[in-house]
Image 1: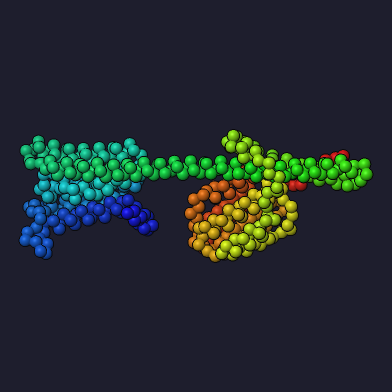
Image 2: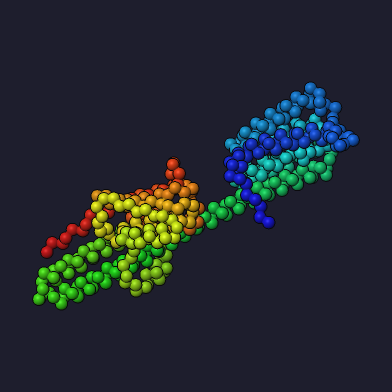
Length: 406
């Protein structure tokens, strides 16, 4: 059976509150153990002489004040907080006429040890454990020197619970560190994978452009003497395709140089000569998604124009990945895509009215952010105040290449 996860609201409760609740529960248990409960002939424990006297109640008040102050300090000053909790445990035990600090009095200390070991550096956790064990040793040593009896077995039990609490907290700390390391490695790998994906797409675009250039150049060569105007148009198309390809390469290759070169060459080894997808395919994507059950409304703003191939493809990929996240994670039946052609930029926005959070485990947002960064654009993604989720991207569009003088 799998352990039931804590409800989200319980995860928001500060550790100090849990420690204060543990102290209150253990103190209440101490009193219940010394009174005759219904169905019992006698109390489980005999109350000490001072337990209900004014001096005993004063010690109890001081112990509770120290424990509550330690609970407040636990987040900011963990070792000082633990020292206060240990002092409170020792104070309260003096009221019990017991030979050892009782497990109930050490419950708040054990919980504090867990939180310190789980949330603080390992050195701090070890120091906290040593402090707890040192108090137990000092307690028994003082009683031995004064000729009083000691509870060796009880003290060993308390020490064992302290060690177990520290071990559980240390294991939680190590698990969290390992998880963070895995997430960092996965995010780094996602960035590398996205760069390689872009490199493959660049290869497709370059191959397609080179194919067009070869065809246009061949056509120009065949009609250069018989149809000079047609040859001139063909060579102009060659120049335009070449300039757009070089411009895209300049924007991308510098940023992609750190990707794995061996994988990059392997990805670029194919001989596909078909054009990459772009905004021209957006209506087809919207229709396919709508047929799958999520209505996609596409809105165009500004004067639609031909974009450089790398920018056209990147905008399409951002919309494609955003719609994929809506289908998988948003729990909604509709989303809205807006593409805005501005004078020097192209902007895209994808919004939905879903649950307003993403469980994107495929690092799609990381890939989109990396793609926009490579093109020196702006990218945002997050829940909307009115509900749902929004992804926006704004990519600069370079001015058309100037015509080379004849």
